[in-house]
Amino acid sequence: MRGIFFIVSFLVLQSLVVSSSKAGPDFNFFYWVTYWPGAICDSQKGCCPPTKCNTESDFMIHGLWPQFINGTWPAFCDQSNLFDISKVSDLVSKMEKKWTEWGVYTCPSNETKLWEHEWDKHGTCVQSVFDQHSYFQTSLKFRQRFNLLDILRQKGIKPNGEFYGLDEIKNAIKCVIGFAPGIECNEDVEGKKQLFQIYICLDNHAKEFVECPYVPDKSCASKIKFPKLPKRDSLGESLSVMSSV
Ligand SMILES: *[C@@H]1O[C@H](CO)[C@@H](O)[C@H](O)[C@H]1NC(C)=O
Ligand SMILES: *[C@@H]1O[C@H](CO)[C@@H](O)[C@H](O)[C@H]1NC(C)=O
View 1 (cartoon, rainbow, N blue to C red):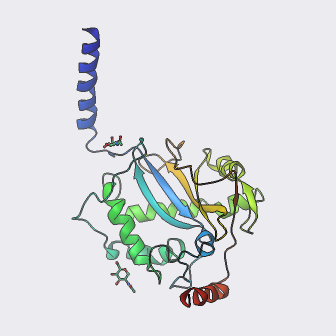
View 2: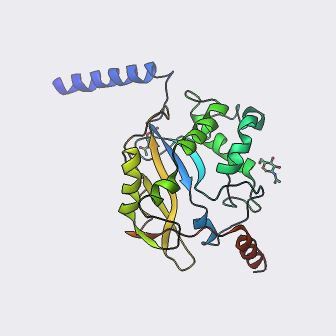
View 3: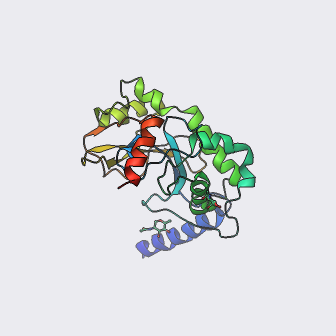
């Protein structure tokens, strides 16, 4: 009897929580994800010089992704409010520097396509918190506040093609934001694991860093390469090599 009472009251409580949280976020936290362009170039999986030459030689934003605590995520939540570049026109010049795709998805790279994908897939699911403008602006703000390359350099971790301890990399970031990030690796042409994407966890209003409730932490080795970022000229060369294959 007592057990049933608890189950019933739990269900009642749960439905109260669900109905009263309608106005707030219906996901648990955010990943703010950046990637290291050098890890795309040396995997030769599609590296193109960015179409716009003002791209920074630095970590690039991939996206701001709502997540559930169980490791799944909502996606493509609203077909009626798809990406509209006119809503972010004042942010475009910043986004061209810090949020480009370097041929990750398309070749030649098309930044608009990445932004469209990010909003349509992830952004449409966070409209209880952000509109299109504040969604992109928030991600850019974190990028400005938070210079990953500097944070790593201060601990002697540099994009020089050398290998570094995965924990060393995580701790360098933890020292600054208070929480360890998730690291995703890919492989260079020789199959060596290397630093590809960094997942930093934010609360469900994207205001504070939080301990990651869940990280996709399976793709790295205990020592990983921090690949060099090719200069634009050699990028052009490797492109012509690739297109002749
Ligand atoms: C994960 O949590 C979400 C939100 O509560 C839920 O909709 C989804 O079904 C869950 N998925 C799994 C595999 O448990
Ligand atoms: C880039 O992507 C956008 C959105 O998908 C599309 O409208 C545009 O035509 C593309 N531009 C090029 C040069 O392919």
